[in-house]
Image (cartoon, rainbow, N blue to C red; front, top):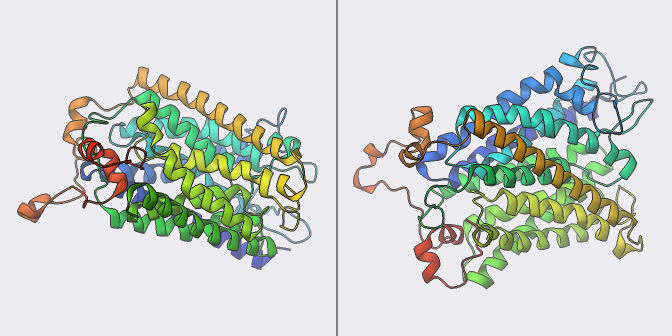
Length: 452
């Protein structure tokens, strides 16, 4: 018999997570220059369209089919086209319809792919991006989702991280954020720097869009994390509270870091702190106390605020700081389980600081590093093949003209109607904007490490 309460919660959570991708489109869209806003948002919407289809065709089977070898991959043919799942239940004694779980996991696949797009803003061909999205989901995301999310049950054999390594990743710190962050770094290296990177101002063109997107992400993330309990129960409630408080703490951590370093706390920093906190609490939300969640959030806000400046020091162009927020935040949140987990939380595991020794810590580190390396290497290979065949990067003259006009034959704004008042520049006093403006970087003290 179907548990209707749990089913309603999971379907609602799936809808919340689906909303996160349009939220991400707004968040990313506001951060690019005006001539790229439509393309940036289209990359998220393109991922929604493509991944929805291939998830049903074969993605679910690769991720959640019965394991076909060493916990690395689900059977690619077991659930082709979701065959046989329309009347199936996850439990014979009450539970979720399998299709509810299928839908919930589908939206995780969608947003993971969409996250990567922020690293290659302004310079990637839309067609090449769509080809990459389909290949990457198939070769990288679906197998890694099997490793992390597919648990052994009732004769079903799942993935190695979940069942053999037993690393805790409640809602996707490895499979989603470390995976997407490592892929973003690889793809940024394959495509190279934007024209004018480090010389020209590349300020966010619309901060209200950024803040609206961050708000939608925070809202939808309660479905992302609490929905991963797969029931309307105490675990979902604990996770909800931990998600709320960690995110709030991360905002405070990011703003305090900006204030101490740059003399001003910014709206862009606040929005970025929201995402940093959400990323960090995702793997750990079922295993830490609310106090532990506050610690994770504060550290994530401060560390990610500092990490986003690495691209200037190391010379890679991760346009919208997917590496600094998702890779760094995901690593911290995943490894923090090994330190801050408490057996009083639903996961029932003690970390180092609660007397559990290093047993859980080493598991967390191994899981995080394996996903990072596999995702980076596989993405670099996929991106390089696409670049050398159909071409991934936009021609220089098209990049100068603007990707919206060249690729989509549209413009996000009708500047002619604005007259002399039209401007694509952001107001002054925004630290991430300063980090992208070489003139202001040279004249403002201690701004090199501020998120661009």
